[in-house]
Image (cartoon, rainbow, N blue to C red):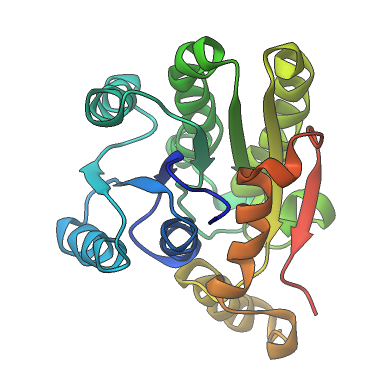
Length: 244
């Protein structure tokens, strides 16, 4: 039997990059998948078709995770269709590159709203249903810059650092409910990493090593592990995936 057979998964930022690869991997493992994106209907529809072609039942919706009303509508649509939610992947994110002294208050607030508040919004929205089931898997996304620092991403790194702390606290609080909360820090070839590479090259003359980046598809098995029963006794952990 497939590892996620008949499980219901919500993946934010599911229209491209790592989220899209994870959605396909979950569908391949038998999950029913709901993907959300903030604005690009065409990209979202393309991802929906890819997942449907794998034989998975799929929902695709526009939703801004920084807006609690959007999140609630997403979760309610999933409950209305499938009656449960077993897995949440908090993958939605944005990246606006600038040196520390050039980060505006507006940009700081927007970055933390999408990453940190978005993770909180989605987690809180699914908890009543996971608690009712006495079962659930929540997977959050960190970043290497939150662990080791980088250039041009102070707001992004701060948000991701907050997500790591949120993961560990949520894992502790929810362990009695049989809800596992874990965090993945990925390093993969995506639009974000390409933009960061270009920025670092322009600002600092630093080019990345191609060996340090892998495809989003190479990252996806880590998400399958945290979403499956294989991780029933693993919670509050941070896993770095993608560096060779």
